[in-house]
Length: 428
Image 1 (cartoon, rainbow, N blue to C red):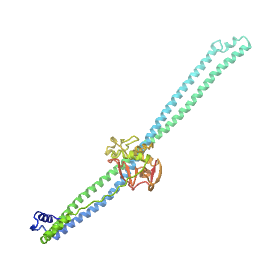
Image 2: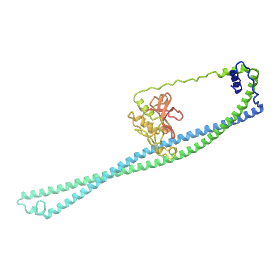
Image 3: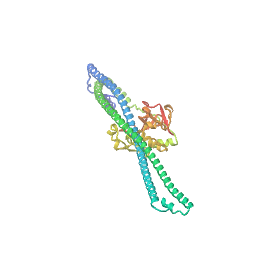
């Protein structure tokens, strides 16, 4: 309804039965003015379409780079977990080697002490005139039987010391072998630790490169988005100008019609304005389930709104994240408490007594794989090679709960099928 018709309707309401005077005619723009306005609006619309195409391509590339960053981020997370495991193994091997060396040293000292005791016995056997001595022990014998008895006693004492020395020598040899084996194991553990450290450095470097590429593409997409927004604003302005000219033309035509049929047009416009409109509501279905699966889902949903922190989350709840030297750091993930995608799964499944590792690639191999079309409530969904980019918990009816990315929070969202793995993982 135009303001001219509204004015006529108001006049008839305020003064029923009285003919209202038609106001002066409104502006009537020329056809050339309207055509020029439409041409300008068409040019702006074409530019918006061009920028929309560029933005679509830029956002597709940005999504590709973002997925690559997520994959590299999870590989860096995997390298961090592997390094921690290698460091633990090296520590245990070092402790075992130290213990073996201590035992070997003790066995060496025992051999030295046994040798000293044997030497003292041998010396005493020549210096004392008793059964401990040597020649003097035989000289004091009173009979051949006594001489034989003294000889057997001296031999037994000597044999006992020699046997004792043999036992100690054997023990020292055993401990030396254990020490050598422990040292060899320590060398292997140290090699594994060094390899894990190098793998972590490589993964961190690859993640930094990917993050820089993603940031550069994000800047390009933002620049295109800015240009698109500016041209859209210009388009809106141009459309507004055309609408204004066309509105003026329509107002003039309505004024002419109102001049001929004031009361009829006012009544018609008032009736049109009084027509109500009612929105339609779409029913929402509620998912169903039970058992430990519902415990897992309830734990995940209890964290809705908790911020995303890369490397954050464990079996007990959200934790401070870790540095990723990229996007996560720009959002402060390393000093704020929250979950990443695999950390949320750790917390959710711990409620059912399932303890997953903090890496989506490992979680992808933690249960039975079922075709994606057969996914059920409580299954895990994965994205990226080997499930190493992202993981979420399926809720049924095409919905999932996830910790999506830095700068966001735990949320419920429709399942994204782009880049999704063809199998869901069923743990319970």
